Length: 375
Length: 168
Image (tube, rainbow over all chains, first blue to last red; front, top):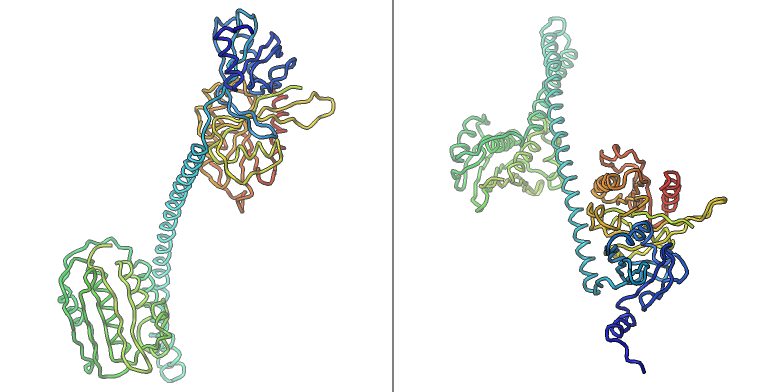
């Protein structure tokens, strides 16, 4: 047995263990020989690019190695995929061999990844994709919000224009009806008089509806400063300024504190609800209670009357615009009041509701929670 | 037989590997396996009478390379770039523009295709808003689906024809 040189023995060992493979290539890039398990797939006698397609495109660079003074041409971490699946990742290194006067291509294993590393890589990528999705959706949401804000502004402007432009003709119609009512020829005809009075009343009603519509569309959008409001003083002023029938009593219950809030919206809400309670009372005598209770983060206000009450089946509808229950349809008001109030309460971060068990029992309580801190 | 090198570029997860596997093996794998480094496929083009057999060597690249791919040896002497975006993830379409311009800068005069992939996931593909910068590329994008195979082979065949025309 011939004792082989240690270096050669080591090279043979590594070649046999798939650590590397060698391919000898002539000056037309045809394979003349190969060695090592990793080079087993290379066909001898064929162009090297047939067996190693990643070398296509750099043939000229490989041939140029002869004159490169020992330079290497490296193609790292490439996997050649066939119908059998992906081969392990391999490094291809081409160099010129002066001793053998030919090109050598060294094939070696690229760093492999364990299953855990592959799974980690997959999860990292999934997270990156999800993050990109979130970013994109955030941008879309921002854009949608901007469009919504523009649409709201357009609607507010539209409502303002409509109410302003329509009120003029409505007013004119009312004045014409009022003038006609004064004519002797008309006053002697009760049926004509009645119709004209009807026209006047309806045009008055439409004018007030337009005013309420404008107020409703702008509710909750005003920029206002929070300030210290003494709710005792506020409710007293509302009671004082609001006419009521002689037989209707009003009293306040609970503690009405001073706190920092938006004065005008709170004033509007309390005033509207108090006026409603008076307006829709079905008797000449009665009691209206205005209550306040501290709930910690908010104040619970209640406006209670002993009127006819509201049947539970109507409780949701009363807060919708232009909805007035039949029993109250003959009164003043255009049906915007509670919708208006609801919008203001919710704009302040509060909520509103009603308690009434008509016709089983009389009475209605409209309550709303008003946050003590800013929204 | 002549062979030409074609680079498959695009963000992670847009369907590059699925596209080339549909092209070469006519199959679709529902399990997402990220491409690490580069996988190389050989696609033999359909025979055309009177013309030498041709094949495309498709380099399916790791989406993480980004624009750094243009400085890599992998890019050397590529005849074409097939740039893939995911129609269901519009932000990947912005990256397509950068990659197209990067390739054109690195290898001027070579063919570029824009593949808007995953058309099967989008209910109204025609309504997807393309980035404004697409217009300056002056390349008509093609809607593809690696899942159904829609337009995949056509894109590569057209790319091969254009490579021949350009003499690349």
